Length: 115
Image 1 (tube, one colour):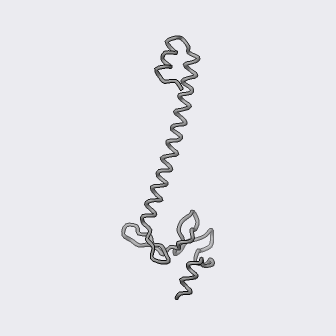
Image 2 (tube, one colour; image 1 turned 90 degrees about the horizontal axis):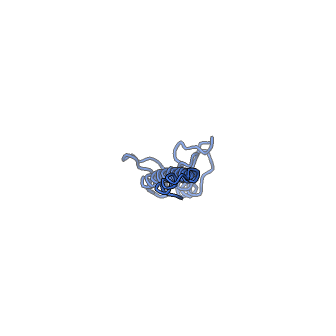
């Protein structure tokens, strides 16, 4: 890929067709770089969200609790995820079914048996 300086030299020599080809190559490279930059920024934002969510979780056997703004929310099952890949807790749904009406997961079964 040519540099701007090389393209200017081609133009000075009157090689406009070659200069145009080099400009198109630079534009294509620029577009590819911008698209990659956008993709990487989205990935960074997703990873930051994952880190923030993981930091808010604490385990109080056998459940997870989420602490947000000093408020404890939960309990959440450590095995299951509901719609939109969200943790299952009170009022959660799996598809159109309330999670609490579905068969118990292994952890929930063990906890109920211990009571």
